[in-house]
Structures are given as structure tokens and as C-alpha cells.
Amino acid sequence: MTQSAREWPDTVLADGTERLRERDVRDMNVTAGRVLADTIRTTLGPKGMDKMLVGDRGKVVVTNDGASILDRLEIEHPAAQELLRVAESQRDCIGDGTTTAVVLAGELLAEAADLVEKGLHPTTIDRGYRLALDRARSELAAQTIEIDPADTETLLNVAHTAVTGKWSDDEAAALLELVVEAAQSVERNGVVERRRITRTTIPGGAPTDSELVSGLAIDMGSSSTTLASLDVDLPTRIEDAGVALVDDQLTVEKADAITHVSVETPDQLERLADYEGAVYREQATGIADAGADIVFCQKSIDDEVLAALARAGILAVERTRQDELHKLARATGAEMVMRVDELTPEHVGRAGRIERRTVAGTHLAVVGDCPDSEQRSLLLRGGTEHVIAETKRLIENCLDDVTLAIETDGVVPGGGATEVALAATLRDAADGVAGREQLAVTAVADALEAIPRTLAASAGLDPIDTVLALRNRHDGGDETAGLDVTTGQVADMVDSGVLDPVQVKRHAITGAIEAATVLVGIDDVILATSDDESEHGHDHDHGHEGGHGGVEATGGYPWAVGH
Image 1 (spheres, one colour):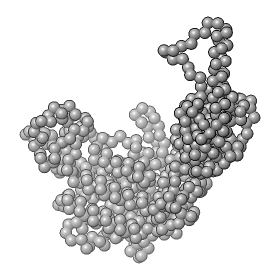
Image 2 (cartoon, rainbow, N blue to C red; image 1 turned 135 degrees about the horizontal axis):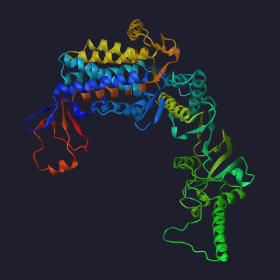
Image 3 (tube, rainbow, N blue to C red; image 1 turned 90 degrees about the vertical axis):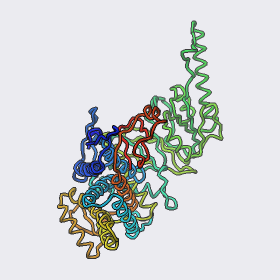
Image 4 (cartoon, rainbow, N blue to C red; image 1 turned 135 degrees about the vertical axis):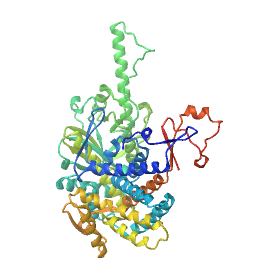
């Protein structure tokens, strides 16, 4: 899998162009798919088992997530990299199902290799695969179970399916309720406004200590001066508060390498101190006169300004992240200013309440009951940074699946039930396909059953016996029968609550088939030139293999793949 492209077997033609034999290229492409698919299965191991990845610089990552492992695999083979792009597309567009997409793509390439051995041309395989894709997408639509965004129980089942084997039952029950509640609270007309959900990590405690807060929680712990050190009794709750946003630092302008201040006498030093004090008071007065009860500053705030604002009854939060400032602007209607002297009452937004809370030693300012856009904050807890990071990643996966289930109004049975049903449909459809394409359609059906085989192996069951049992149940009319990995038995996935968003399946199957058809159709690999060489030879003959459309410079990447 990590074999360098320069080590591939090649045939050097008389003109000096290094070109791989067509058969060799296809063999290596399908081998890359096989190797990557096997690597995913063996690397992930039983579902829910953590893996420790050690990087070349000694960085250790412990994870049980297929996408995290794929991101860190060092793969040089161009064909294998193409399969990784399938996973990246699945992750970026859908958020879940990356492992399914890669395993399926590898199986499709392996099936294509067998078809080529039988004498099928790649274009025939391409047509057959695309016929299978069209039929599979139609069958997915028929299998889709519509859901109501207010159906909390079904959404909890979708979220639980996404994290099966990755959390204990107690942790899953507590966290998934928070996820579903958060998604439903920001759902409007079938659309989940994810930007209104903030994920804040707080070290300390257990994942079950996580909570959902109504409002936007801003971490105040990064401030250089804490409120406790100011010896000022500020309120812990402010009703109908004015919110100011400043994209600058609140300080006195310091001398730089060009300008400087020389102090030669005590009187000059006193006047300098008076000047700085006046600037600090002016900044605090400007914020107070604008009607702000709290000010969020992207950069630092000098201690003197913090103290002056506190004495005026104004909360000040420094080093607020840019994304948090944008959320505050949307929620409160506040307009961000670049300098504090530009702040006017028109720039100040409103919040129904502002609360100061302390969670595990972390000071938070919660801005809630906003008139323009109500926010929700998930406060994620964990004993170590690794636990918190994994909790946040799993929360994101749950939110992705719940969002898809709500916005696409549909789910399909999980546990391999959908793949077995699709495989049966494709085998029936293959009988009506004239020509050799029917072999390719059947091959797609065989590849789809790699998903329940992998689930069975992960659950410690015999893959062949499991697939046969699933086929028998489906032949008997139970099209929602799948593998329950917690019990190791074949059961009705709808009754068991094992549900996947239909969009996860649709995108994974589409991406895998498209990648497989592209790689199977590749018939040569040629050495790419550098940018300088390409420009130098621009006015010369553009190659001797005109049927491939020439070679483009790839910025130093050693190989170009042509159709």
C-alpha cells in the first residue's frame, strides 16, 4: 500500500517514455483497492475497539474512528489515494460512513479485477456498474422510512446507531439525549441550523456530566485578570443586557521601534501615568455611555481597563474567538467595531439575560434569550484531553446523522439489512440485463454484501453463516432483517432501533461505484514533468500518444494517470 509509484513494473518504449502495460496498471489499481479495504478492516478490528496510532514524530493518537485512522495513514499509491478521496468526500459532504465507502470501493475494485480476468472490457464493467447504481438508488428510495423531526425516539435510535460500540450504555443514554434535544431545539421547517449549536469542551468530570445550556457559552478563563481578583461585586445575572463587540485590544498605544517616549524627571513620569489613566478611563466611559453591560473583545484588555469596567458594573471578556464574535453578532444584533472609540449605542446588541457560571473551574459567560437567534451550547466534559476530544468527535457524528435524518426526512434499516436487500434486488435485476453487463450488476451485489460480512467479523461471528442467514430472512420477505452486533443475532432492525440516514448509504454507494469505474478504466500511467520542463517544451511536439490527450504538468507530482 505504501509502495512508491516509481517501483511499479514498467515497459520503456523506444521513444524513452515510461509507460506501464495496460494489464499491469489495472492489476495495481485493483490491488490498491483490495489492500486498502483489507487495511481498514484489520486496522479497525472489532467495532468499538480503540487503536493507538504512533506517528513518525512520536505523536500518539488513540481512536476507534475509521475517519481518524484514514486521515493518518501514509499512503503513496495514487490509486489508493483516490479511494481516500472517496472517504474525504463522504466525510465532508455527509460526516459519517467513511469506512463503509472505502470498504465498498475496495470490494468493487476486487470484483472488477475478477471480471477483467473473465474477459470483460472495462467499458462493459463501467456500464454494468452504473446500471447497478441507478437501480440501487431507486431501491433505496423505496426502502426509505419517513420520520417526523419531533419523533424523539426515532432520532435517539439514529444517534445510538452512529455510536454503537463506542460508548458505554450509560454514557450513550446521557449524551445522545443532549444531542437530539439540541438538534430539535434549533430545527426550523425541517432544517437544523447547526451554527446555532456551540460545542464547548471543559476538562474535568465524566462524559455523563456534559450538559446542554440554553444560550451561547463563552469561556472567560483566558482572561489575564479574573473577576475574583478585582475585588468588585459584579452581578452573576443581568437581565436585558446590552452587548458590545470590539475587534481590537483595549490598551494604551505602546511605543514601537520608530517612536519612543523618554522620561527624564519624576514629573514627566507622573504626567505619563496620568495620560495612561485618562486613556483607560476614556475607553471604559465610552463603553458605558454606549449602554453596554458586557463587552467581548477579540484581543487583550489591559488590567486597568478591566478594573475600570468592573467598577462601572460592566463585564469584560477578552480573547474571544472570531467565530464566537460572529455568533454573538447574529444572536444579539450587535455590530462589531474595529476600535472602541467608534462604539455607539447603535452598535450595541441586546440579550435577554447574561449569566456567569463556573463549571469545573472554568468561568463561563452565558448569553441567552436573544431576540434574533437563540443559541444552544453543549458543555462537553471528560477527565483527560483525549476523552474530551473523542467525546466531541462522537457528538459531531451524532449531530451529522440526526441532522441528515431530519433534513432528508428518511432513514433505512442498519446492521447490513439495507445492503442485503439491495444485493437481492440487483441479482433479480441482473436477469433482465442483456449482454455481459449483467455480470457487472451481479458483481455490485456481491460487493454490497461485504458490509454485513465485515459487521459479522467485527462482532466475532462467522461472516459466511451470517450472510446466509440474512439472505434466508430476506428471501422469506423480511427485508428489514439485519445483524444486531450487540446480541450477535439476526433481528428486525426497525424494531431494534438500528437506523441509518438514507443519505449516508446513498452517498457511500455512489462515491464507491464512481471511484471504482474511474480506476478500472485507467489504462496507462506516464511520468509527469515538472513545471519548468513543461514550459521549456511547450512549443515542441505534444507527445506521441495523442489518444490520451497529452500530459499536464502536476507541480512535481511524479505520476499522472490517464484514461
